[in-house]
Image: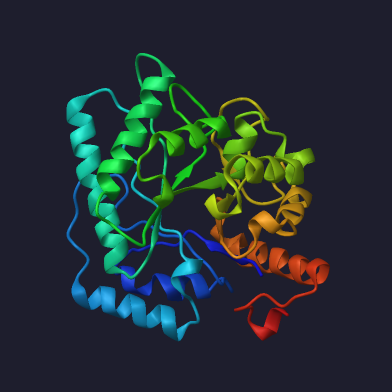
Length: 292
């Protein structure tokens, strides 16, 4: 089965994120755990955390369907001691917030090495992941591939594999594949989606593929630009996403829309769910009867 939904807002109260996802006929979703552009924020209130869990249960969601996203300020690969200290503190806080909500995974970017050699940045990313996950059980950090602008790590899937291999806590690490980032980095998602997923499985194995971000791209392939578009509106095209949802690598893990037009989210969710049902011959769990 496939789990698919948008990255929803946590405005006013994080407790209502599940309802926002359900408004778009989703059976999965992503969310930030705090304002993604600040170093610190008020803690999640106990009542909000309890309400979030109750809403998940009432609406038929479970933790396997949810892929929270860490804030953008974290740079695991930075050579600056101050930046690394602040990033580690924030990363540990993000993990704590996710666990408070009963969630068991967190998506994060691998970071930018800024200066020196890429291999040094990879080592720093692995070391920070080890520090953040030390002593924590039953939790996974999914490292997201990037388009590769500037000194950002992760445009080559083998770099994500190297970070995992360098880490002591490698059993607690996995990856998130972003289609727009893949395309920007030079992977031909438009014409070779299944081949690229086969490649990812070959590098990481199925168990390390924690989730996906399904985004079309405003930018051309290989331009190193991260510019999301609605499915079928960009350079990748809708057929590639239909191919993706029919690939085993996409099943039983959250497929998250970070597309730019919220008014199209219900269409994007239902179109891919219906296509999956038609071509794989199963009714994915959680699809409202109105769209089956």
